Length: 471
RNA sequence: GGCCCGUUCGUCUAUCGGUUAGGACACCAGGUUUUCAACCUGGGAAGAGGGGUUCGACUCCCCUACGGGCUGCCA
Image (spheres, rainbow, N blue to C red):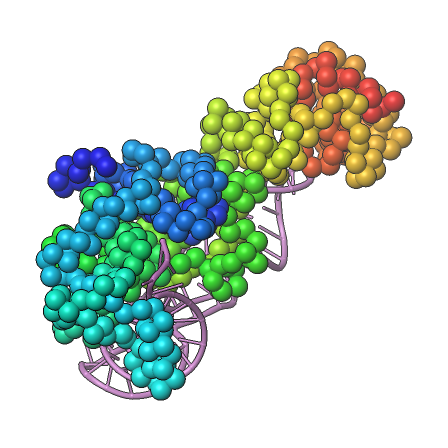
């Protein structure tokens, strides 16, 4: 464990269970924690909650770290394994015992379950009151026992939540939770508190499914006389239908979004804006997000995923990204979605052509589609629509255009003048001649501007394609 | 069952007692255009329901409805 942080420094953490992929909701929780810490010169720590040995796998942990890395969230220090800290958890349980704020309970699980069942059947409270709470240690039997928190029975436990406001729980609604199991392993409730305390976590930002847990955890902090962190319980993300997000909604894992071709910066922007707002700001940079993000700006109601809006933001980010940053992201997308990597020749053309590609695509698949004129090799095979644009008359015009292009200066102005000249000679508008040109150059009907394509391709390649198409 | 949280246009949200309830995405109509994307103009679209408090409630309080969470020796 690293040394406690300098006093006054903000420390947040993200604590996923390594039981699968990185959930989109978890990604947003991580983002909020990261933003909060990074915007205030604080630390953002990672803790892997791997105490469930049955379900935790190294593969899942790696997938989560990969997801965070793709999203661009960097963490401080090494990820901490909760399982590896089990001795410390047990030590704290024993200390609570010594302080008299916890006690040994010898009731068997069967006994407790039977009690709860009966209570439920009779409509009584299922809160379990252990008979060992105030027992004289001299009467302790030689049986397995758990360590339970000796929770206050009167008064209330108040959570000052930065999102939900002040939430009050009656102590008579909570029972003495188990902190250390009979086999000596810690429960989640204990482990979280001990780890957050030892890691110096000052702000706990997590899903609001933990809101009631916060009350229980507060009791453990009190029992150990530790400072309670600042709480911020954020609403969960729901599917487009308003139901809790599940696999039947399709994309629940962060990596699904990468494969769908959204740039990471767009995901950060969208996720950040989902459930949080800063006035009317919609499109913003990481620097602005770090500066603006704050807990009071978080809404209290769950929000739904809106792919249309994500796509819109994605388009804006693709257009705004510098070519040098965009190209690696496109290549990573190609890899993530199982497509062929770029050849050196393609990479070179992409570098030259990105300028006319990036403001016409909302996602990487759309961009790749429009980059077909770069990605495909001669001879271009026209698709059905492009084929229609290459009728006999059109081919004739293309043939006629060739010498004009041969003599043109290879600049946008030069090429435009050559094409406009031929069009005028036939009394045609640019639209009539652009169609066949597009078909010849790209074999598609949806492409960047024909002039841009010619510029990117160069004179030689352009003329070769025109010749291929003109026959 | 008990406890807790939530509810503004289709969606994300602004509003923090006084606004013609604003913006964005989406949608519809028109314009521009070399396809697509983009862009321009205009349009429809909201305070869950009922009680209070107040000169005045989307904003504060209560009830109901609906949605969600917790109620484990899971995390």
